[in-house]
Length: 177
Image (cartoon, rainbow, N blue to C red; front, side):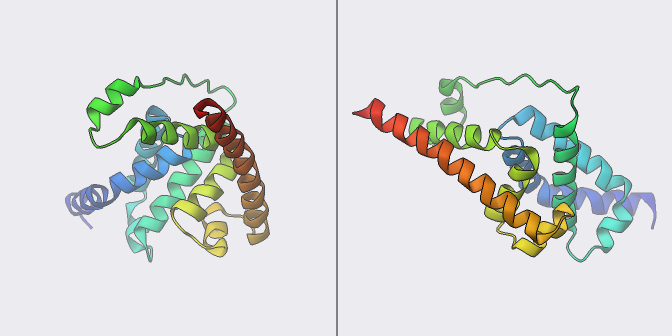
């Protein structure tokens, strides 16, 4: 395959799936848009370099999701990486997305904060199982672990999220009353 054909195929793939990959990365990165963008760019670079393998995969998007999950876990494990987190001014977010209400922004921050409280592997399991609706076996294949590991990580993550979100729900109801 010529380089120009390879590049053209890759561009078509990226145009069709970049938004999906960015949404996945944003969830994996618990709303850290800059980190999510870095994960997507690293993933796309790796995909381009191994495009021959990717295009021969049964489902190239599944291959890309697996790759993005691995990049996220690798990046999250780097001990020397210190990330700054910035909080968007809600008025700026409202101006940028006029259809999103303040309640939606608050709920988004609560959910992303709860996701951020999970470890990278648990967060990956939750995103793959509950956002992408993968079954246990497919999630295990993507993460390169056993189905038992997926089940236990998912159970622990959901219990933790229930605790965190339950405490938040209780706090919100106290503030309202």
